[in-house]
Each structure stands twice: as C-alpha cells, then as structure tokens.
Length: 145
Picture (cartoon, rainbow, N blue to C red):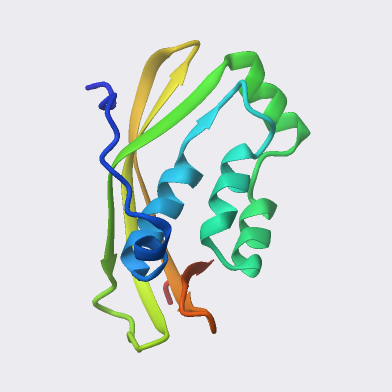
C-alpha cells in the first residue's frame, strides 16, 4: 500500500473554490476524509461543515462518532488521510444552474499508531446547491433508487 503523498496540491482561493460545485465538493471530501485520533471527536466533520449546507452537516453528524466509537479511535490511535480525490457530475442525475449532483471519490489510507494497515476507496453521491449569495455548498447524500 503506497503512502499518501506528503505534499498537498495547491488549493484554490475561497472565491474560486465556492464558485465551482466540483471544487467545493472535492475540498469538502478532503476535510471529511481526514481524521486523527489526537483531534477532538468529529473534528473532521467540523472542518467539512464550512463547505456544506446546515442540513448536510446535521445529517453527517448523525453518522459521526459517538463516545464509544471515539474511545475506540483513541485507544487504537486511528488516523486516516485521503488522496486521489475526484468530483464528477453524475451522468444519471439532472443538472441545473443551481443544483448539481456529483459523484465524489477518494483513496483513503487508514493507519493505527502511525502504521498504515488499509487502503480503501470512499465514494459518495452528493447534491450540491448554489446559495443565494452565489456560493456552492455540498448538500445531503443522495441515495440510489
């Protein structure tokens, strides 16, 4: 399992980031996907919330860590990082000037006590909404069917 690259690719500035549904979605996934056992519980969700609607942040928090799972994360010294992040328009979903449906994916490498033990593909289909101020924000997860 190859390690994640140590150098991050440059991020667009905030105006550019929030002007593009794919860019804001990719940044949301980077923040959501990265966690470290030394951080407070659900710190990844707190970071990701900047890039999403309040409804999506609330929904993600329901699926986040609780006291028991967070205790397990700390005991095992679990951390995760993502690379190979992509955000592409869903070919099955309708797109409009104010609504986009994106397929998000990344390679996540999980480690325990600093030793990588697993590489996995993470994937989510998300609705992305243009706000009244023109910014795009990641919305709720989209279920197929």
